[in-house]
Length: 527
Image (cartoon, rainbow, N blue to C red):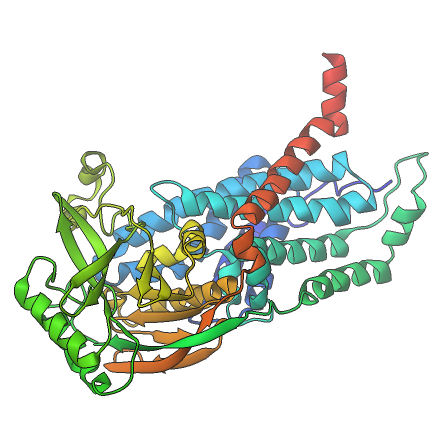
């Protein structure tokens, strides 16, 4: 029989250091530092700090781990707006981090008691811990106001040997696998045989306690994950796409006149005139004078589309039926906007203020800057561009798993990710967003055009390889033959089923352990 350690692995003061330091190390795995192995190191530090903790200690360590992680991860939110939104977002996300830490600590307390065998410790416990971590990521990415799905474990692996796994398991599945590997490694390191008095250890437990066997289990876990082959992302034909980064004054605080951003886009588009092109893509908000309401802006797009001999996909702000929308237009010469997609995931406290009357007293000077209340769209996020199905993503849409599923259900053959990173300057935000876009390309088996007003803009193929790019803060146009995807990856076929499965394993395993461990059985018998 194998029993759990009676005391925490480290004293509280050291656990606080490990947890807080683990959050910083964990951030180092994400762009712009982008050293992907640090994700495993940071996760290990945070999980070790939680083992054997009291509930109060777990909440404290979880909060500090989350705080150090998010303060570094989303430091770009403070660039122009100061520390209030940066600290507020980091603190809120850290509270959810603390909730997840509480659940993980219960798993480390209950699972070894309910299932003290080698199979329970080395098999079941890491699955539950990884499932609970993924469940916390799900909660953070969906609640409140649509959530903030930034900083998921999978997003640290866009350039790693694990990146191809998103085609099989999706982002949530890869987050689960990363945490599972770390949790297995921790259990292999701390697992040892401690027989109860007069209760002999089983042969399996005694064998598993040997250092060589434990090391073999850890290596086998990593090998099992890496043995998953590349998904064969099949393509059929291609479309020639021009994508234009104008480098115009597109930031909220730029001293720009109406039309300045559009003029910059026009200037950067001119080199494409006379070249063969099937469609031209502009970024989010690139037509800063809405062509659906202004005849001169419409005339400019008509003229450009005529000279290019191609339709244009253009970002703008539309106003319809008394509501503002962050929109993407499919524009054809002489026909105007033949299709419109409205951003379905506008950023709370960035593009609109939810429950404005409640939140306004907390930061009136900042929230008053958000004059427009952008309305979430309801239209399909797939355009038919002369027979090519293009999935449309506007900025923050790219983090929403459901919108990716909707694109694939709509038959998208290529993804056009329009964004405006100008409000974040030369921070790591644009590289973080590009990493998400790269993983979406691999996940869906679709080429992806990530086009920004100021960068970083790239065309990425279904394997995650960069086909073309424009340097950040330089005007330019990419022109490439972009492969059209035809594959249905397991991740898109099963959609969010992986997320439900792994989160269910975590929560369900915790509940089962809570009601079956010896102490719980004794209490029920006494009752």
